[in-house]
Amino acid sequence: STHWCTREMAAAAGATAPAAPAGILQLDGSVLEGGGQVLRNSGALSVLLGKPINVVNVRAGREKPGLRAQHLTGLQLVTAMSGGRLSNGAVGSSNVTLEPGHLCGGSFVADTKTAGSVALLLQTALPCMLFADKRTSVVCIGGTNAEKAPMVDYTERVFRPIAERFGFALQLDVLVRGYYPRGGGRVEAHADPVQQLQAITLLERGDVTRITVHAYVSRLPLKIAERMASEARKLIATFYAGATSPGRQQQPASPKIDLEVVSEPEDMSVGNGTGIIIIAETANGCLLGSSALGQRGVTAEKVAAEAVDFLLANIAHGGCVDEYLQDQLIIFMALAKGVSRVRSGPLSLHTRTAIHFAETLCGCKFVVTPDANGKTFVIECDGIGFTNKGLAAK
Image (tube, rainbow, N blue to C red; front, side):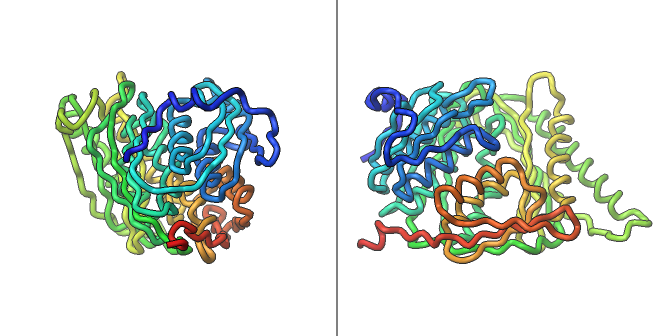
């Protein structure tokens, strides 16, 4: 049977949780990045480790503090997966308690009822899906291409291939695309459980050999996407032409640039939208990505330039992962068996936050060592080798 995770679940959650319930680990949601990532990582680890948590000061420093629909839906999803209890789970709540039960696989539906990011919902759910007792399917409903969040295209084309190196397979099916402000996008995620995750090593990036520019429109003129793609190609080609000019010591070969210009079918999307995602592939199989969303009053060329600038900055530092991917790998490094090592650019606040909560909940230790060049860092973790108890019992 399919389990629906809705805001109405909160009605059964009872009164406000006390400040420090007995036997419950209290976490300060305002530390470091102080945003939704605290809830995503802590919620998943709470369920996996069977540790009840009480998160206080939820998103305290934000313009709209407390839980937003996307964060609440993610917590409700992992609570439902574990047959647990979520107390004080409501939009705007600044103090929420998750008491996990027994993690079970199956079919689940998580509906933000907004344009809240489905990619961020998946960030919360995936670790739990991997350690369930059977194949798990989650339908995420919300924004597929949302502001201040990875596009589902990034999750599919950058995150998934790299994260699968930990030893799992994730199937993503984008059924309907949903854009801000209406949302309504539908993405199905399927994963078989694993016994354990294996440590990964990503230390040598290699030269960039191919850059793919994917520009799209939904219910808007295709010309917008064509202009985005054309501008992105021009800016990338100009960058590499300059990088190979006389007098430069290092002369990276210009990568192949592929353009994908897409008009999303109207029956496959809710609302109109436009944007761009750019993916760089390297000789050693690393993937770096960037993206930008079109906005009213912003030219297609400016949207393209935003995505190109981010990508080139991430290529320039020489790390194996981009800033978006950096923090998403931390929870898997913490759970894996063995020592994972990942070379990255400067650590983002999101990454430092993910490390803090992984160490707090898992008891593992991360070591971050700067390289001599001052631009790259090696993130190292001897993971806890978390074992799937549901599979072990079979």
